[in-house]
Image (tube, rainbow, N blue to C red):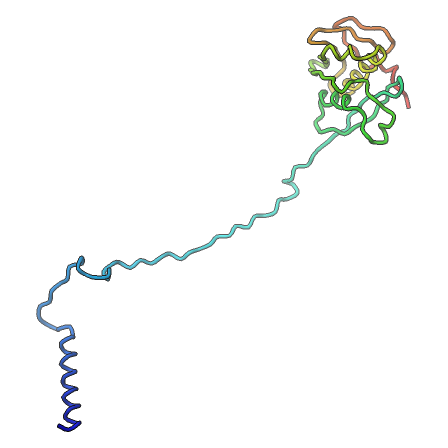
Length: 210
């Protein structure tokens, strides 16, 4: 058999194989059960949604949103020798009588206007201040008066009265110790009866008029 005859036979054989693999146009066929289909070929196709990234840009805080500390000047009365000197100090606003009293106890700071001044109020001094109808009641402890000399008692009372009556809404001051009303000395040297309020004018004679 020559080479031409062999090639022809191989071609015929190839066509026969291909014909046997083709899908028939007619005749019967057998359906394969879904459970028998291997490798999950009949699984439904799933399309994943595209991944997105959101970036939020925050605006920088405006100056209007930044809280600003507000202060206000108050009149304080300190001592120079045996006289009273009025000075001003800035405190947090709105200032109240308790803040003014605390500033007196704190004493003069290192500012030039406070040089040479002192307070007669001891650092251990504590008192509550209640203002009712223009009258400030200062309730202290007994050690407040017992720890002071006669002159410093008068100067300490003067500091408190002059400072508190310089605040808006306060015209008079009452003093009590452990909730019991007491008598206090006035600037002239005399004393008021227990339960009698004192005013700015009762101590104005002690102020050093600069």
